[in-house]
Length: 280
Length: 346
Figure 1 (cartoon, rainbow over the protein chains, first blue to last red):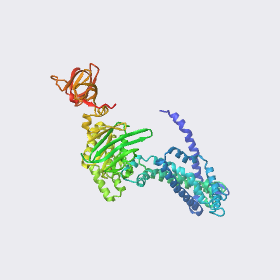
Figure 2 (tube, one colour):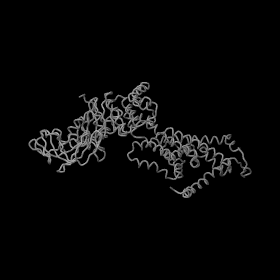
Figure 3 (cartoon, chains in turn orange, green):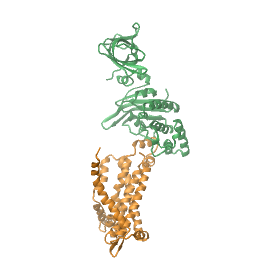
Figure 4 (cartoon, one colour):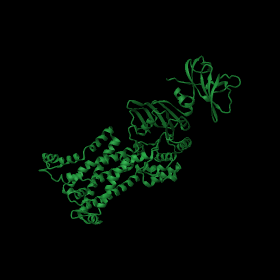
């Protein structure tokens, strides 16, 4: 057994770190959200004006709605891409480890590099447009490719699909193979086995993967910044500008807290769902 | 004997460099309880998986009711399997598990649930119909697994060491239930086990598998009383193997002599421990006597096991009624007919 002094010595530094940079930061954020800006100064008097503004201003609600729509689309696409790949790697592939590593490799490449890559591909004189013109599919560059919600969805899907893949793959790996055999043995064709046994048993992974993809895309601000253009702005970009050029920390803090509550509620809900569908 | 249901003909299977089955042939009759017995690594589970369709044969045929089935996928074969770890679907209730086979083969839901209920009644699990499999004990899961397989009325049921996860008492109970259930439904069973007592207790015939080759296939009493090889004799029950020399109708091994009908030459004999007894009265013509010292005894309830050593160093194991008192030095005897000749393959 370890002595009490040792336990304190070991746990104190991380606890201090978390308190300072997480808990303390949230307290500051929380306080700011009830203050306001007057004459370019932050006025430390209690007010609900920020929350009222969020609830009534069509701008913020519209961007929030768009962010959720983009995150939802990214989630759907990430699942549709990740599930078949995870299924193949888990059930069919011969070189499981190699394929697994190949799918994980993009996670080691800087986010910025991957986002910029799409800029190069989708831009007016980018790879895609020049190829299309060369093949005479289009005459002149298609400007709608870049700086649009479409570009944001594409980039985010590329970036967050591995995050959906990982938990789905893990849950497929945990489907007992003798259940698959039992299903076949009882007369179920491959598609029925998939629908009635493999899919239901891999739902916890699907839920976890969807949660990752949705939450990470919802809070993303780099992809919209780089490839989104004015029509692709997401809620985090607004927060960034409120804390920066717009200098309205209180409103920025209030939006951040709303997002925090939204995400935490979502995490709670999905965790309960995951528990409901796991059988260990 | 009933007509043949399943024929396995010269089946071979290789995993990488290891040939797990090296040409196995056997027939299963309708309504027969056949046990495939063997040590781990003998290929018995592989044989079962080839019949079920989870693995494909490298060579050979599997014929069922006159049709070749070795190329069919598992879901098209008229067999069902009871798995070692039961393999019940955790996301379905007990009744849904049992109805699964009928649901995927498009039996109407009402009829499926009705038949599932009857199958559960047959294995005395009606009260657990709505329970989750994870709430059941090993023995209960076993019954559900049986019901789930039998409800589809397969022609052949495959059982892969289904009792190995149960404790000794429950195991014996399940053995007798399994046997009476098999008689009741009249379906052929192929039962895989490494437990020779289980094989003897349950089977109409035992197929003894060794290193991917069939060592002997016969009824339990025949395989026990007339083992075809030293391996058979040693694997099924305990035995004393005696190397003897036969000359003019008499077998000689050290100080031992007994009458035999076999031709002259060297021969290997098996003498079961229970056929050795303390000598009493005058020597009979049809028996052999030898003096030995009792090295060790073990009381086992109804019987007692004695380890004997003759003066020339020959060792015997003997089993007798525990009421029989044996002095440390004693004369023993066995009947000549109980010394069974064994063909020497190796």
